[in-house]
Length: 120
Image 1 (cartoon, rainbow, N blue to C red):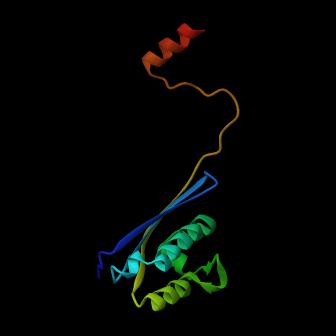
Image 2: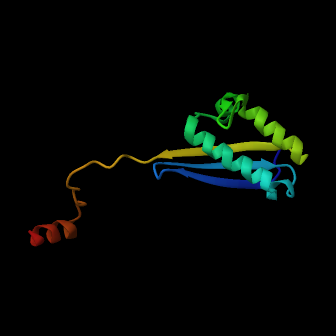
């Protein structure tokens, strides 16, 4: 069941957590609506906050913006308003490693080692 109206949303939280989420709509008009884009943004924020392991796991979690409803219920509400089927295809979440204090070790290529020793 491919609809081919994919939409990818990105979200970065404080420069330390990044999320890409791909949604699909059964109607190309619906995938261009502001309500659909807002849902995509909210879902990306949800992934950043809750760190679900799978799409199924995410759908069963309480929605960050409305904890009384699950993510699946929030998607269903938007889909009903848009009169279109909305599917979460996939997502990926990255976490930046914290900066370690102190001197950063230079890369170990011959040219860099030579330049590093010469500079001392």
